[in-house]
Length: 150
Image (cartoon, rainbow, N blue to C red; front, side, top):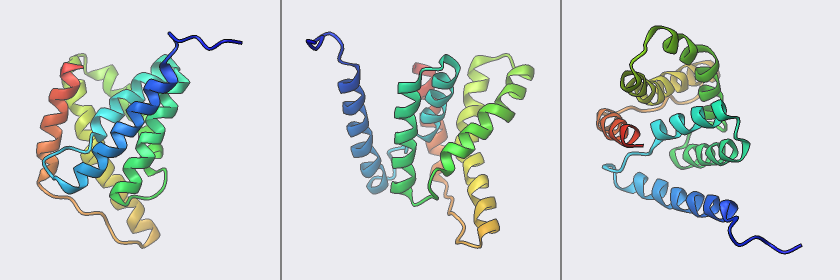
């Protein structure tokens, strides 16, 4: 079989993953660069809704790199995002019909909700609790603008 040169999806996914890894490492050094957690939540939800497994797998790997870079527990973002998608997001969509309002709530749930989830897990497992700072508000605003533009 000959490879189709027009089918470059796996190469594009690998390039996107490599760029994300570099960006995440730079966001740990430069605090003005948001870690893109809210953007990953939106893409996680879109991949789940479309049932597109390659993009869901790519977002899952990106979330694992996010956890490694920031020092969170393994697969905690995956569990939290799956919990959000199956239990909280459907209720929000039932009551709120404004798309931009929902996107803002998604970003807030990605940052503040994940911090609360990590705090709960740290109390249950008796490990050090995660820190939160005022940069979170900046990250929420920046990522809301990015999600609106997508």
